[in-house]
Image (cartoon, rainbow, N blue to C red):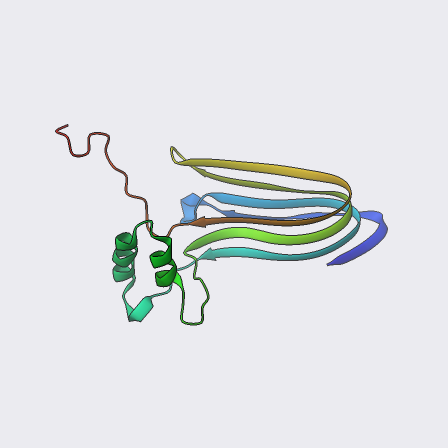
Length: 154
C-alpha cells in the first residue's frame, strides 16, 4: 500500500482468535494515522489440522508429537510437509515493513488463564521506517499438567 496526501489516512487491522470459538485467545492489532506511508504487510491466521506425515491419522500424529516432547528437531520433522513448508496448528500474527510520516502502532495480547498473559503495545510518531513481526503460535499438542503431588501419595 502506498499513500501520500494532505488529508491523513486513518485506519487499522485487527486479527482475533477467540478461545471460546476454538482459537488460542490471541489478538494482534495495527493502527495508523499518516500523511505518507509505504507499507508491505503479510497477515497470518491459521487454525488447521496439522500436516499428517506418512498418511498417519490425526490421532496418530498427536501421539507422535507427544512422544517427541520438547525435542524441537523431532517436532519440526513431524510438522514439516514434503514441500518444506511448516504447517502451523494455530497461528495468529502479522509481518509489516513500513515507511511512514505520522503515527503508527501495534497492540498484541495473548491470554490463557493461569497459563500465560502476554501484552505488547508500541506507538511511533514522526518519520520512520519500521519492520515488525508479531506471531503467536500454539503447540498443537496440549501441555501435560503434572499434579503437585505427582509420584507421592496425595
